[in-house]
Length: 573
Image 1: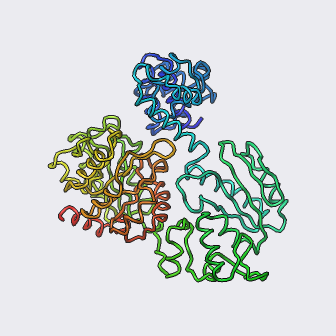
Image 2: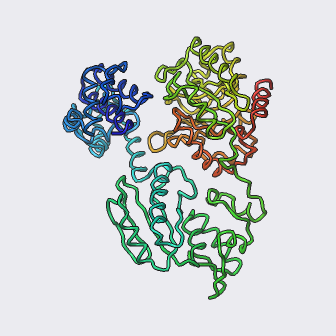
Image 3: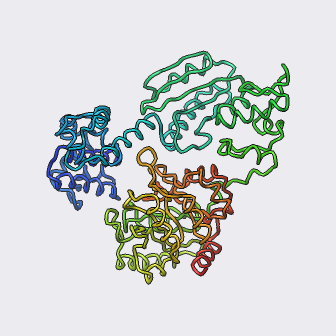
């Protein structure tokens, strides 16, 4: 069994124990064990087989037996029995923002509610008003959370759907049944949340590719089977639609099925005004097909420069293409350094040196370390003594390199009053300071906006981290006047982060273009908590491209020397 699966099961056992009202020390033991296993450098299977797992700090005899059973058999009877003793719907209720194990247990014990649907009905009947620890405000919050879940119940994170789409495409490509196959739809446009996967293939034998498509081993259900279109649902619930067209139709279909609907409508309107009919089968003047071998030729025939897929949202891209003003969008190869990286000093899984080596191996010239500040107790935030220890290690490592630099940063909590989590004598010693909200999310709009503005105007603030605090498909952002935040960032020369964690992708791309127009600079950051997380920058690149950003708008496209000077100039302005 993979380490990741073991960690998930241990965390779920902790949740289940909380739901059952067990001693909190018992559930905490499983949470701590999950974190210990996650941070292990050694191979867990080797530790188990050599009988050394029990020597790991925090793994007692009972946990050692359970983890050993998991590793060697792939199952754990204790976990299966525990899970069977708790109604399945209680775990679904935990997905509702604001509902933790204690409140879910109260709802279950007091009202015998075992599903989200039952809970929604109970809220509408005001049955939660008199429950201890609830009241009208909490009941309304739960109702709002349920609506949020229902709204996105058939949606998926871009990262999840993209990986499935790539695997499916590779499967089809390996069979050589199609002349060409591409991923289309909202995935190609790099939308942060998608409903399904769209795949387009060109083939002179549609039936052959349809049969191959329907033979994909990870299919749970076939929902449609046609001559040129078929749809399936994968084991993880994501739907996949396949369209098959002739080779000469492929460019037109590729544009059409990439979308968006709004972009396509605007394009068809433009074509119509030129006396041209436009659809997924081609461009037609009367009955005559206008031959285009690729999308570039389609745009060119309609008097437009090529519009990258990420911009096709009918938000000014057609007007810009008509004037030749489509920006030279940033690409992953433009990034010279990685910022916002957490190490084992706080809540990261890897050591400072391991992350430095991994970043260098990826071809970057610098890394910005930014562990959590001291108030972030939940993430092992660093006190001053730990900071000095980390800075000493950074200095020693920097002495080993002439072509790479480690910048001393921090992710400082913005406290409820807008002040930062260290005194100025500490803040001034960092190369850069990321300021982020991690607590007191329920402030009203004015209070939250004032809080962030106070932090932004602090002399030592460099970057505003994950500006709205949203967690995609899990939690809406806090109530904040993002337009005002953008104005202040522009006025004070502060950088706004594009947090590339696939659960965040924050700042929302819809705000990025207006911020760019006001002169705001951005940093594309992975918010990495392990080596694998460094790869998340590719998701941030997609969001930056959707926001019309060019390399010149992004600070970590600067080389070491220019970035260092940029930070000094920002501090001295």
